[in-house]
Picture 1: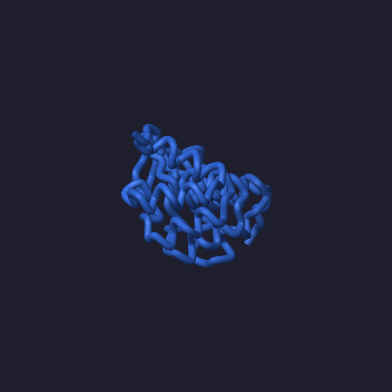
Picture 2 (picture 1 turned 90 degrees about the horizontal axis):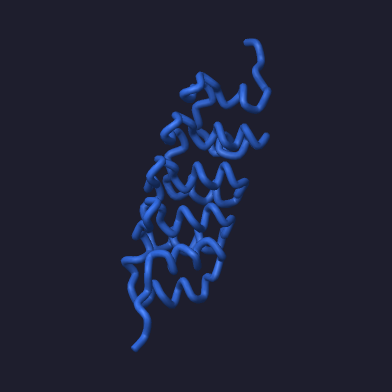
Length: 150
């Protein structure tokens, strides 16, 4: 008897970029494409975290929810901005990801991109609020050390 597919197994394939096995498992049961693990993360979260552009694109082609939040309210876009996945950021935004969504600390994808000196990453796709404050009253520009007097 074949072993049952688990959410953790699907998450691992997404994070590691094992697109072949991921496709095979999701063809057998596509409900796993958007099922969340114990931390509230979907395969899209894990693919964004692992920097797996091909897996992100595959999951987006399955029309998985692009703005699902994990238990700390991180979206795949916030994760991709933090992890440095520029192409993933663009692909998520092109598929409707909310640029100004914030996590439990009030930080958006722009805060995380700015903290890594990639302020242009989500901002270049338009619509990102550069004047939003997180719970520490920090703006993305301040995190990047780029406050300019107007």
